[in-house]
Image (cartoon, rainbow, N blue to C red):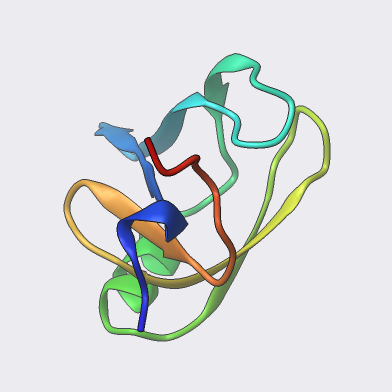
Length: 79
């Protein structure tokens, strides 16, 4: 079962997918190479690989919704 700890928020502006902050190096306003097609496949539950352009950290995206990417690893602290 996926928990909220495995999520990371994203924003879509036109055809670009941004992360407010990289979950690995904490760089802000990261423009990803994640395409609209990859996002749609993730929304269908098809695994996608997202390589962060800032630090080359790898995220395996298991699914997506309109606000969050759901990864196969813990991305945030349980607060």
